[in-house]
Length: 255
Ligand code: BGC
Image 1 (tube, rainbow, N blue to C red):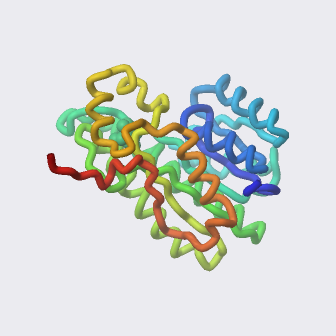
Image 2: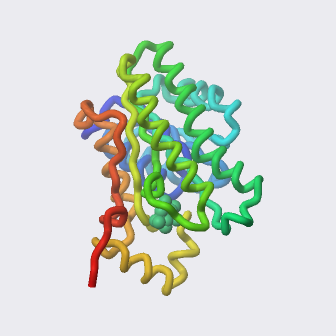
């Protein structure tokens, strides 16, 4: 087991990639704080699954986009499960719209959760590590769209491009504290964020034709990468992003 004796907080872990990461971390021996915004029942189910694996777990309601609540989230997590070692900034949303129709409220919603939320939860986590004089690991759940343009999803791409620079910048700034910061860039993963796409066979086939491994990723494909980054096996990695995308990003071929 890679994460015995560790405690992790994973934002947005009531479903999708976050849920898979939470359960995988528990299987690797970690205790896990699950956070959710609008799915309390699903979060409770994830907690039950983790407890069934013999680990401690608690679900905490958290709208990470409200930066002022970040310190309270970390305090609550520490009160419930003790000092934290690992933070996964997983919570993320996307909203489709042509650039000329993007509403300010949607722009703010996407940037608040995907970027500002990750920033201030990390800040609260790092303060906690400094107070308790312990090292730690931060994993930012990015996307292939930290590099790859995604028409009709401009705010999402902005948020992930900036998250990439947050990973790099904090990796350098926090290295002297023994805090490593890395990112994961999933491609197309079968999760609730993709519900519409999964139901549209034409669009799905078009997407699959662009993925060299010719399948959507599963949340477990990403959870394995997260478990690696959170473990001692990744002790010499910082400031980097691992792409887990079936080859989507660098795909090019001529007929
Ligand atoms: C987005 C999905 C998209 C995938 C591949 C992800 O970051 O959340 O909506 O299908 O990238 O383009």
